[in-house]
Amino acid sequence: MQRCLQLAANGIQGARPNPMVGAVIVAEGRIIGEGYHVRCGEGHAEVNAFASVSPDDEELLSTSTIYVSLEPCSHYGKTPPCADLIINKGVCRVVVGTIDPFAEVQGRGVRKLLEAGIDVTVGVLEEECQWLNRRFFTYHREHRPYIILKWAQTANGFIDDHGKSLCISSEQTLMLSHQVRAEEDAILVGHTTDVREHPQLTVRHWHGPDPKRLVLTHDRPLSQLMDDLYQHQIQSLIVEGGRKTHESFIQAGLWDEIRVETNLALTVGDGTPAPQLPADVKVRSRQVVGQNVIVSYSH
Image (cartoon, rainbow, N blue to C red; front, side):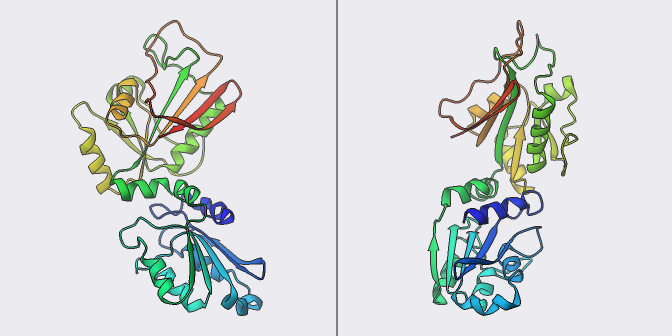
């Protein structure tokens, strides 16, 4: 299953808005096939895994186990159901990382496999599998995008210098910041930040698609924004606004991840204080890049 997750992560850009999924076929103690969902509208992970099995190993499928990080689909979409493919291939055992929250799956794939007499195990590395597709899961469960609040601050806790914009990130952390942008659907700043700084909000220091650029106006309720983003199939949102914008999301409970970059070598005499972290945060990761530290928080 760990290998499934490694494979699935390769679909971070191409699979959207579908989930990232990896599949590994094992027979006689060795991997005979593997694949992942490369691009939306094309073959799913299971399809690609079966396609990679060599002709010499085809006869092993009847005694093989297929590991898949997300429940095989059971409905007709842009591609046929993967549960039917697994049944037709004669595989004897299926190991699933986690159930698919999508309304047209939600256990139906597993049920179809069980009804076909296939041995099914569910919940292997379940937390890791759900974290990989946290955007997809949040979108379908909460009917809103997965929200990342993101800001940079000085060592003494300010996000600007006496109200003027300040370069806090290094060349290296700027690249990492743009990598995050390339992996998310949309990016938002507040009206004041947009007028004062005219941020490009692109991935010019990385590669990949630019996120959809949004500006939050003073008269737009966040609940309305969430509804609009859900209707437009925006599964993830980065918030890079100022203090007031970030605190409005925090006060509304609209956040899933908070990324704070601190330049330990930079202080200012005064400025806009960084937003206050919610009381219920826990550190998920900590990355040191030169004199800067990036800490990721979650609930």
